[in-house]
Image 1: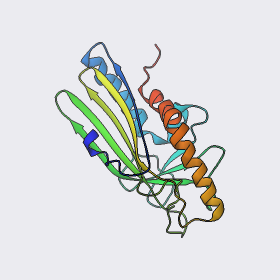
Image 2: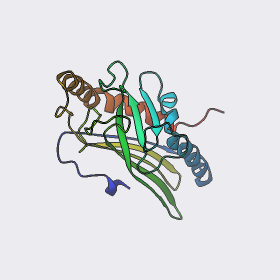
Image 3: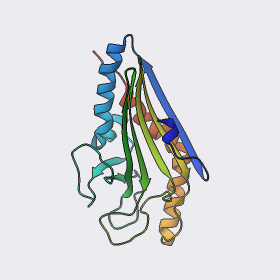
Amino acid sequence: MIDKIPTQREGGFSDNVSKIELETVAEAILHFETVKKRFLDINSWELLAGKGFGEFSLCDKNGNLFFDLPQVHCYIRIKVPTLPNLSEDQYDWVQIEKFETEKTETSESIYIRARPAESPQNNHPTTSHFFKDKATCNFIINRTSKIVTVEIHGRNEKANIEDVTGFEKVRNAIVSAGAKIIGSNIQWKSLIEGLIKKDEK
């Protein structure tokens, strides 16, 4: 799956990976199913990641809340804590452009790629996100033999400071800088750990 991640060409990037090795392949298969269930329930990411993560909601192509499995063309609606978007709906939006699965005799994986997008709920055809639309966020869960891995890779992350108002420029610059410095290293790690953790017996 790693070869599917877009090439880093400009701006910032991040790579966050966590893995766990189970005692047997059978245990790893069961745990991967648990991780997969959590991973595909985007509406519950905030609960898994904990306080300060922000609000993530899966939405359909019209921007309405969606409670089924994520699909290509679905949106993910994001409310950044402390500095919400200054647009009409106060959300940052990304759209799922890839959703792929692979399975072999010894491994299985799911890959989701999301890209900053315009809000499907208003009439402004400009990217409604603190990063420009060349940025991508790449989510991967994988099991190979007894090892389960969760990965989040950000690529080509540049602040969205064009075609927005003065206040939005300032806000987007602040949030994107925070995402590069703090968010990628803390926010995504908190989600990864929430996804991969073993349930306490």
